[in-house]
Image 1 (cartoon, one colour):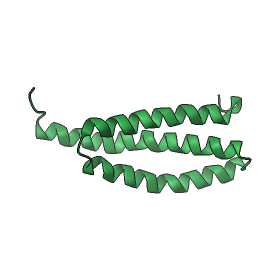
Image 2 (cartoon, helix red, strand yellow; image 1 turned 180 degrees about the vertical axis):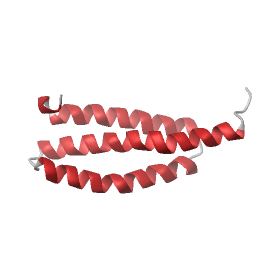
Image 3 (cartoon, rainbow, N blue to C red; image 1 turned 120 degrees about the vertical axis):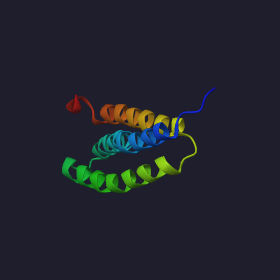
Length: 98
């Protein structure tokens, strides 16, 4: 098996940090808002709380993308986790979110 050229590895990490981090944070926000709505928190408060948390999580995801040993694991966790959290968050929010 041939190794991926170094510029492509770097481009993959950059794309994962920007796109994958955004998808992961979007999923986290959807999940958090859905869970907080189920808990009886008003929408505006849930949205504000999750947006504030999103800045910190995006920073961590961005940095982890470059520190992780495997680019495949980074893509899997960020895209897969983001998609899963988005689906669960949409389900938690109920029919009003559809």
